Image 1 (cartoon, rainbow, N blue to C red):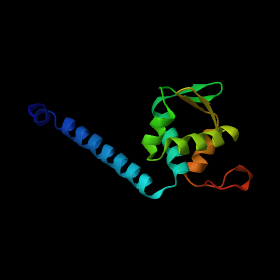
Image 2 (tube, rainbow, N blue to C red):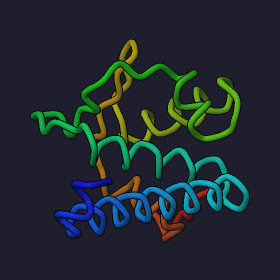
Image 3 (cartoon, rainbow, N blue to C red):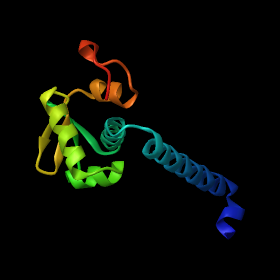
Amino acid sequence: MNLVLAIPRLGLNAMQMMANHVQDFQERFRQLATERVERRLAHALLRLAAQTGTKIPEGVLINMPLSRQDLAEMTGTTLFTVSRILKQWEGEGLVILGREKVIIRYPHGLVSIAEDLPRPGGETAG
């Protein structure tokens, strides 16, 4: 407390960080409550890519061990649903799946799904 009184900017920075966390939690809750699973999964993968992604020749590697069960828990759905969607996306060339790893081959495709934009070929997400 004395440090915050001596350097008020510390308190302001801490409050800004907490406010950002609250906004992030509110956004995730809104997604869980209102968005289709495909959009939630795309958002989760894009968020993880932004936080831990490493650019590699094949695309963007989410640089952490990541199981399908982890993704199911993050997106409020079942392991079966996550596996089905990821397999579909792999078939479309959006991702490359490995044991506890995901490489995003086409980030713009995931953005189209996350934002519910028309997808290449005239399809819509969902």
